[in-house]
Length: 234
Ligand code: URA
Picture: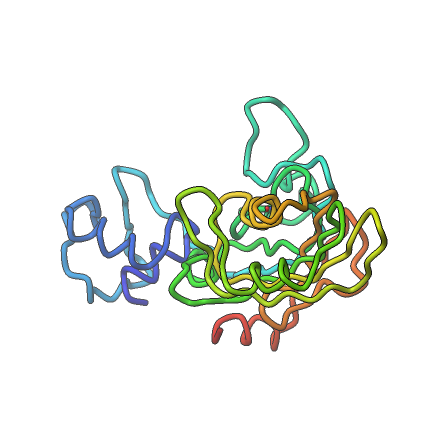
C-alpha cells in the first residue's frame, strides 16, 4: 500500500495531510527518514509519524449512528459529558466521528476508522449535500424560503445555494427540510436566525443519498458494503 494511504488508513489523518507529513520529513520507515510519496509499504515495515509507530487497521469499520441530543461529537470531552464514543463503545476498532453535529442536534453521523473517507466526506470541495429537518419559530414566508435558497449572510459569510422545502407550517412554528453542502459551524441555525426564524430543534436525516431511516436515537448499525462504496464515490 502507498505510504500516504497507509498513514491515512491508520485514522491519523487524511491522505493529503499524510503527503505533507512525508514531504516535511515527519515520517520514518524502519528508522530511516522517508520522503518518497510513492513508497510502497511492505508487510514487515515499521512506519513512524513524529516518532510514533503507526498501527494500521487491517479492517475498516463504517458505522452510522443516530446521535441523540445532549451528546458531544468528539473522541473525548474535557467536561466529562457523554460523547459519541460512548454509543459505540462495544465496537472493537478505534473509530472517530466524521464531521460534527452540535450538542443540541440529533441524527445521522458516520463513524469510521477510515481517515481517507472521513476527509472526502468533510472537505467542502466535494459538495456533498447534508439534509436536516429543522423546526423553526414563526412562519417561513416564500420570500424567506427564497433567501435561504439563494444564500444568506451568516456573519461575514454568504451561504451557497441550498435546497429548502417547508413541510408543515402553523402560525407559531414551521417544519422545514433543508439541504446544504457547506459545513460552517452551526450553519443551519445561523441561516434560519438570519431570516428571523430561530431553530427550535434540528435533526440530520441524510448525507447525500445515505438516509437515517428508522435507526432509533442512540442506536447504530454497520453500513452495508454498497453504502460504503457509494460514500467513496460522492
Ligand atoms: N448546522 C447546525 O447548525 N448544526 C449542526 O449540528 C449541523 C448543521
